Length: 145
Image (cartoon, rainbow, N blue to C red; front, side, top):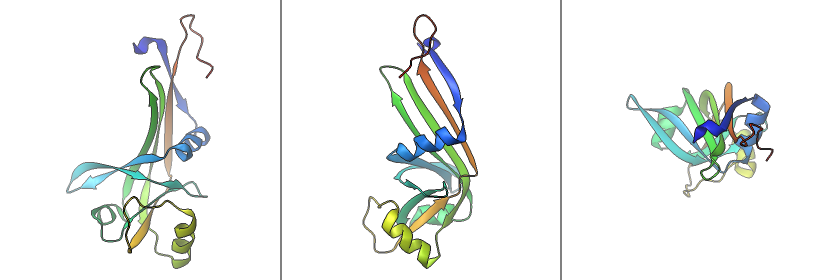
């Protein structure tokens, strides 16, 4: 099954390129001393940080502001058994600068849930890791797709 696949590490540049293409990611954080994972839409900002939008009074904001979190995106083709995964690890901060908030309101992600008190959360991409699993042809050559 996976014996015909090849796993390779992705460099930061390729990982960030794939990250920017994904429509949905998962933020991984701690809630009441337990791991929590929440799917969210997001955007990659010009500095390479991950930005998401949520309600100012959300449990997520209280749990992640000022702490280290992980953010994961992936894509997988079940039939071909190929895909990739990227993980960003870094400190999350609520964007408090009014000018930055205004810029992100124009260019950043839209929240899935309408909220008048929306805030942006920035995850600094301090550590970026990625991996790719590609199909290997019967003769051992990698799939060129």
